[in-house]
Length: 302
Image (cartoon, rainbow, N blue to C red; front, side, top):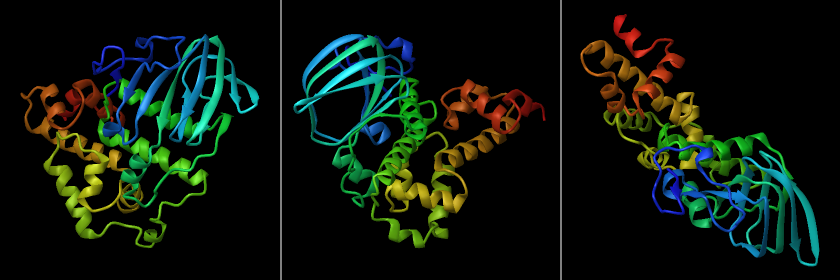
């Protein structure tokens, strides 16, 4: 989940509107640690009017605007570049980039910043990718990148209703997309010949998911169970099960919850939802309606 930087209190649930705007670009509005999503995620203000001297980016990172529009001026060396800001616009910065002077004018807004420290990149790929080599790009629009980054931030703001498995999957997908666009291979390309999980590995995963219906299983936990990096695990899992880890776990939990609803018509629906890993009764109800075409109450009448 996100933590409010101003009072250091973690917020279980909030919306973008709950976050303030600010003309101080150095003060984060909220952050999500790498322990949750695999990558650190921060919400920063886009000033209506603001200036900043000497902005250094020691690690490669991306910025995705959520709201706000206007103009920006960034000084790099002896040159000053005039840029614009718009929702879903992306900035990609290589590690070590240093701006001498920055200035903003326009409508205040917020953006998502995701950094790619070497330690986190190596953890997500089990060292098969030592670092993410990004090339600085301004005013970029790429719906895949912006959708992943904004969805990751939205999940954290809402208290991870889909669980850590989904959040970490978004982080891994974003890392893989940026690495592929930069022509990087994670070292596991040679392992793609195997393509699928062994039968014993599939059985271990099935047992883990079935035996821990209420656990907030993470991508790292599932990948560790079969000795793979989270990045490689996502690929071979989908090749083996025909769907993503998050969707598979969600489907298995829906099936188990549906069986529990039919088996015990006196047990509270909210209790069954929590016992099977759903954030709330409403969360389970919405998923059942979408996937099974029935609400929990309708299932009990079947």
